[in-house]
Image (cartoon, rainbow, N blue to C red; front, side, top):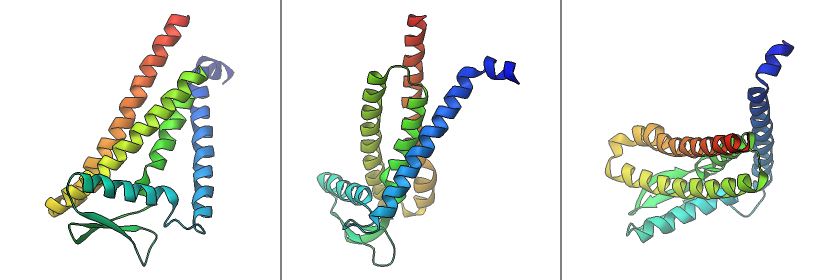
Length: 183
């Protein structure tokens, strides 16, 4: 067993680091959500921010959109061209995806400065892509309501997770090159 652990030390270190960072950030996010229940933001600050930013983005494209707090559940109703089209819930704000991204990058980190810069840049990119994803999703649902399940459940998750995967691969290739140059 000791020989196996020694042989796969790098893999074990990566997995343990990833899990520790992911669990820590997920717990912090859950604490944030628990405390958000008593805040003035509905359902929480980041979800409200995403809802209003997607509204502004949609309106900038010339599509009349506004948001209303949902009276029966912690979500925000998307009113698109006068029609109740969708709702934005906590899971739509992209924070969970950013947590997953950050945990992976930290698990592959070697030097802290480039790691922090990449985490910040990647998180901003994911956040912006998520805003575009939401706007394009309700454009798609409005124009092609019969494809709602496919758009919401397959196409747009594939797009956002695909982007995160590409960011990871870029980081791993960059990290691998740095490690080869150091050795």
